[in-house]
Length: 171
Image (tube, rainbow, N blue to C red):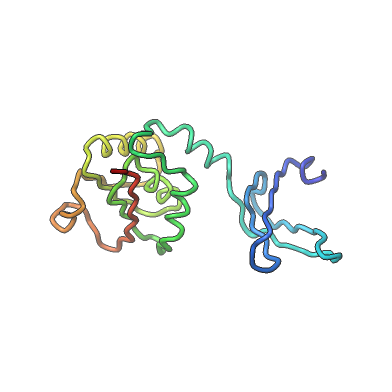
C-alpha cells in the first residue's frame, strides 16, 4: 500500500530460472536506488531495482505515432525496442533497418542515442517513416527508397552498421 500511496506502481514477474525478479512495469522512479523487501519460502528477501521502464513513454510512442499502417503491419513499440536491444549496438553505433515500414525500429534506436539509416522499396513507406521521424524530433537519420538487394550500390553509408531486418509482409 505504501508503494502505491507514494505514486509508484510496480509489477514483478518471478523469473523462470531461480529467484531472479524482472521489472515488468514501472512508474515513478526517476533516480537513486530502490530496494524491494518481500517474503518467499518463509524468508525475507531483498531485491535491488537497477532499471525501470517508462511505460507512459512507450504508450505515447505507440499511440501518438502520426502514420501507422495496419495493412503493412503494426510492429509494437516495445518489440521494436527489444529488437534494437538484442542487436547490442555499441555506443555511438549505427542501426540500419532495410525494411523500415513506418520507422518504429528507427525511432527506438534514435531514442537510445544511436544513428539510424532506413530503407524500403516502397516510396509510401519511406514517406511514412519520414513523417514519423519528423514527429519524433530526436537525432539525425538517413532514409532512402531502395531495394535492399542493391544496398551496395546505394548512397547509404553502411560504415559501422548493425543491421536489423523486420518483415511484416505476408504473401
